[in-house]
Figure (cartoon, rainbow, N blue to C red):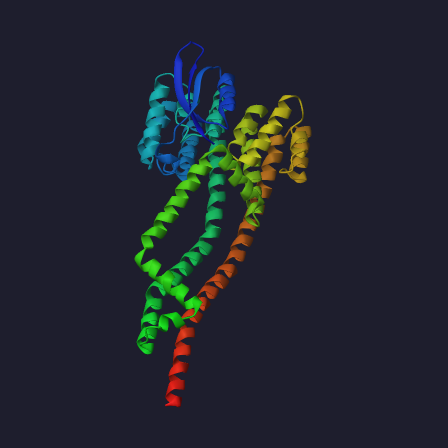
Length: 414
């Protein structure tokens, strides 16, 4: 979601400024109003460097944040004061960026601000989900329990991401190795074969007699050898354009729509979004966050704007008095099983527990889908590699065989 810079007045009339992620300006304004602020101005944050470099700077690894949350929850549960716990975590945190943020949060808390408000000043580190859970823990007087929930949520999310990365590591290695082989053949082997053909023929018109496939391979080889920088420039340029387009609202929606409709990958993306939806909403409801606020926060964490908008549409219907399961049932992105489990959870008063079961189910489905995708990619890559090598061999040996036949015919005729 895009970042926004805002200015608002608190209860005392003091102007506060901050940054936050939101689906749009209206959603952010509603969120600030619920928190007791009177909005003065909201503007979309301008992304420096065309917006493509920001994801690599000022971020904290999810693993570091999970460790911080687990240690924080343990210390608060043991009775350590908030400021003392933050001081200890500041000293032992490995991430330099996180250390600076913890230091600022500690100073703000010492100055009288609540922990949630201090964390909300750092939206690139502490998401709306994180801040919302902390705020719920402060209001309900169960900060240590909420911190444990946050730690468990981040650890589960980290484990799921590691499974995805782990399953895709081998295919990526195979693809990289295959590309290296092809590039090596084209840049080192092909020129030598071409020179050998020229030496054998010793004819100026030999190049004109070469097959089309061989001439194309020769041109490609020369391009890689002498204009490789253009390929790098094209790749970098396409990446920059992609990031710029995807940073826009319509670009992100288009990309997310394609991801849901893509063969094989679409099912995986859908199941992954449903798993995040169920686990995030379960965590928020279990911490005592109101359903409307929980739905709004969840919409921004599922990782797909199409499903996120579907959640916001359901939230609007729920605000008008509909049960949670009703709006979800009318949206095709939520399978009947999810709707049924939500309905049972509403009727039994254990919606968070039912959503947790849904999350566990879809996380297992994601594991299965990832393994199936990995198994399907490997033979495809091997076939493509074999086909590329075969094309190169045909392009190289074809003219050599032709030249040898001509030499044989000339020798026989003489």
